[in-house]
Amino acid sequence: MTDNPPLCPPLLTELPYPVYFRIDDFAANSRFVSHSHPWGQLNYSAAGVMELSIDGQRFLSPPQYAVWIPPGLPHDAHIHQNVIYHSAYIDAPLCGDLPDKPCSLVLSPILKAILADFAERGLAIPATPADRRLADVLVDQLKAARCTRNYLPASDDPVLGTLLAELQREPGCNRSLVDWAARLHVTERTLARRCQRDLGMSFGEWRQRQRFLAALPLLEAGTPVQTVALELGYSTSSAFIAMFQRHSGTTPDQYRRQQGSRN
Image 1 (cartoon, one colour):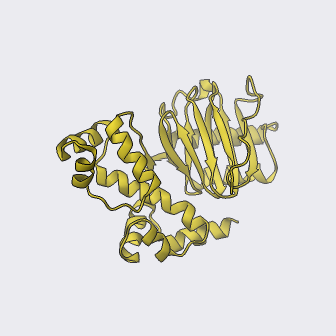
Image 2 (cartoon, helix red, strand yellow):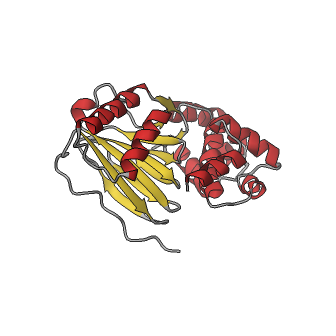
Image 3 (tube, rainbow, N blue to C red):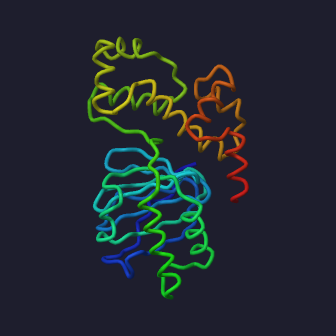
């Protein structure tokens, strides 16, 4: 299936209210063109998985996490499956106590409830005093939200960039760092040092994180757990399930049931 024509964000020069909400449904294989805006943006997929590229870093936005984009950063998006999308635009003066770098956030039940309530009512601009208080609570809850490290940093290093691109194309590849070093004509030590320098983590941690993220859209699509495990390079389902649980706090089947309950 070919991608749909690229989508463009709403044409806003300023926000009609300091906290502006957007609720949309996007079809699978949709893409957003790269853009930026002078306000912060909270991206949340109530159902489905959206992939975002923000200032050179790749984030996935499944229902467990929201993705925060600080003001001014270029970003684009790719929708893998049909997505029920909630977004909150936060005026720049309110972003001072929010993260100054893009990150994944664990949403509190209160945050999810506010987003779900506004979405159910189709509310974009808080007009009543009660709704404006809820918008204030949302910003306060964002300030307290815990950042999670489930994202994939990128690298401009030509050697390391080649390695990461290959793993993105083939997440089930089990080639060791020693093998990659030989393939890329560098020493294992040099390659390990570049991983720590550019990615802030080891090669093994990056690959495990990538496999976790790659598993989410497969599970969303209903792919059997054993098939997902084999596609991602695991010889047994139990090894894949243990990895998934370390990163998400749930098993793949629990994750799938949670998504089913939201649809």
